[in-house]
Figure 1: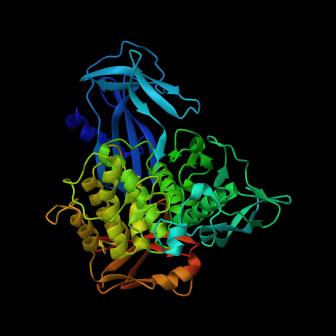
Figure 2: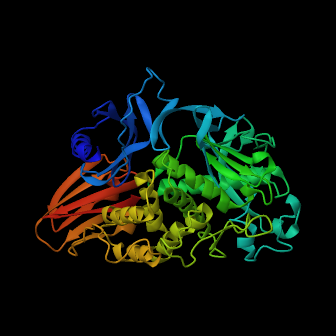
Figure 3: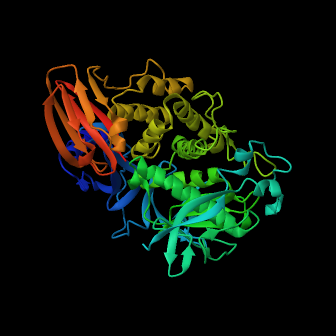
Length: 539
């Protein structure tokens, strides 16, 4: 069926903005979601057979800003069965392959918190979806105590007496690591509430704690008080969300995220809960309170970025390992903006102690030999080459590559597939300037090989982008310069892919910063048969 459909699907999708595609024998593709990123457009279609969605049946299509194909992943299947049922609700039923036979299974929501659903066939559970990925009023500036990013990192010591949890009790050495910071909250009449237009606090699970507020501009709590975890989580989430937006990825931020810094009935668990509206971050209080460790907070927030870019795609062992590895990268990248202390020990305050072993990144490993089909082991196979990129080409470029590649995720993707996507993104965003160091990091971990064919556009040396720093700060013009006398064409796009302007010239074209609002932009430069793209920022 794939060979019969593929040409039809591609031609139709690339020629029109397709919402639903009718195929044959009762099959169709229905648009599940569409996203725009710096490098192009991303569509994901769900396969339906006789009006019922097919479990795992999907077609993902990624095109550049000119509508040209970048990557596709076809996971459609052939179903010979004809449904004996009529008018079944597609939100409640799925075709499911069971013992080499396609059957119609029924989705049922269970659990007191309605955060888990199961597929039933003949009253037996055949699949479970937990709906969790583990592990505007005026804003006013206030002050509060937090860890930057946890007490071990600022003290630059390993876990051990007196730097131990002590059942969340008052420990002077830990209090000494609490730092005063400033952040914005909501002022309502004469009360300061710990919330903003992105993050609110709510009760996801016990223990119950009331919403945090203050009658002064200080949220003065020490770690033995419940309010400390709320302030710590809120500060790091808002700080990292600002970082994501400044990198040009505001569309990765959900409109509203509910935080419960004291959840899971006191257990040592944390998660991003996506099967609810609004979505939630839930932090447990067993062992070290998870919301005390900013690395845990940003890890779980990383899942929300992934879900916003490519929802409902965490299926498959390698895809699941990369999901955790991406979140570990975001956490470690953010943590290293404070200090490099113990950066290879992910969650070095929450874990790597008597409560649990914690997670590592950066150790020597090799794909596929070291792939164990174990989530907490295999995640390091993906986070490690990303941290290699961090050390090789810097946080800013690596963060952009990783955030952009989230839009290309789909079910059952492999590490080599996504490594090649990151190489293509470097070509589209940065003109391939980081091709060799990026590939070297993936080769080092066995995910790619130097002989592997990875399409890459080699930038023509005569085309250069000059004075990006002056342009960003507004002190000078951005210059597109070429040693070739042929005509240059520069197209400017915003982060949604909308064309803002086109300029033609020869040898040199200048853009005044006064023409641009703050934000991220893509410059598409064409000369002769060469097409290059650069990402630039205007602060």
